[in-house]
Image (cartoon, rainbow, N blue to C red; front, side, top):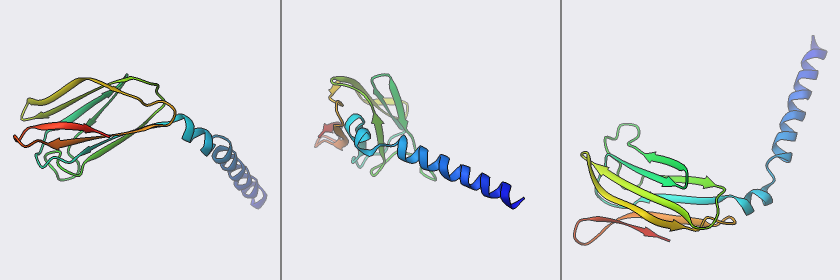
Length: 131
């Protein structure tokens, strides 16, 4: 019985070592994966924020005990995309679209990172800021 346990443990250890060292080459991952980060900096609150990046879609919704999406919410997406990725952002509150941007082109080639912030404007409207 002890011999069987030792073989199982040894087999699992070898499999884990192969998986972590062979498949997750840090240098290769850094070169091909790009990061897209969306952060809510606006003081207003929203029902949800829908983001489309190429064919990928994500939605930021309230979490835990929150009833609305508010300042401090973030979403980070790691993608293997190319140059000029189509991006659209839709911000909704009380079933009304407050902001809809469909014409955004983002360069996510060769490990680049893009930060997009939802900000307040002086006229109490909202807009996005791309860094």
